[in-house]
Image (spheres, rainbow, N blue to C red):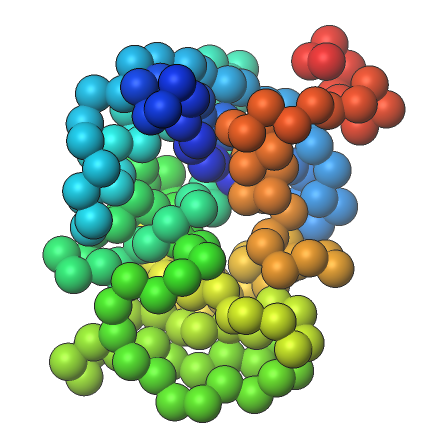
Length: 194
């Protein structure tokens, strides 16, 4: 399985995208790829995938083997058009994808218990679009929604399976580190990818 994320350099003029492939359930880094390219789409709320997806897709193309599942730092169907970045990436690659976002884009939910692993449904106009998931006790929740070729139940299962002691799943934590140019030590890098 893999996590994907994108960051920006040169005041947003360059997009730096990363894909991190982890072995599941061990959550050890097996491979990664990074792509830098000129940003070709302005920042428009709700259209983030058009800004980030081109570089993410190029990074995925660099992998020797495609992952079985992608966790995206962003929304799946918990999006006003039901087509967030996880849906966008999933549709283009044909791979199952899950949106795991740090903030809510749309929808409403009931109160969320403070214990790790608790979740409540996220709804938009009565439609079930995702879950609000407590990834760590007492911290802000994450927002999980199917992106492509995956059920709500399976999206929750794999997101929970990628959590360790941090708020975000290891897949997107690794991708964020790579997209943000945070150095990877030789001790943690896969052989030949330092």
